[in-house]
Image (cartoon, rainbow, N blue to C red; front, side):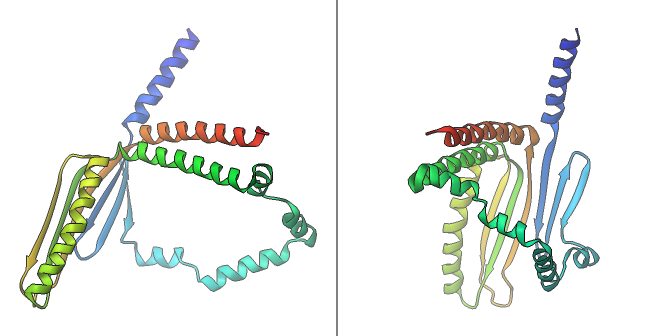
Length: 220
């Protein structure tokens, strides 16, 4: 009976996790607004408040001085031990050679790429509105820029729409033959991803990475 409750609890937890969505709202007209929403909690990432920026930003000189001070405070013995201790990559290179190490990196890259593809295929675009009004000094330059933008943007959007779940998207590129009007760019994006798909892809990739590491470590 207890075992049944544990199974039901695990299934309930998986169900609740599957309901959690990480949502991203992006809006751009003159300024960029970026908001992250998880469940009922909203986190405004951009624009940041001026006070928050001042607190988060530390002078680079101060950071370097602190790092240098920590290095100087380390005992000489520890420094020598750190230098002598070979890294994991060095050990693998000595064991399998450069060719074996490159093959290992290639396998790891394949696993990482597969994980990203698995996650990306579950990304849902609820809204993807992009508008560009191109302006220029003369009609010829505007027409040339219009052609370049269209040839770059439309294929990119098509790739994005085919690789993800894109429920609603609208791309508008208009030439404005008026030199007094500036070029305007508008974007309104709402995209989300369910946590369960990220956990599933990460777990699958984690097992594959573990198997690859064990294979490289114990292979003669």
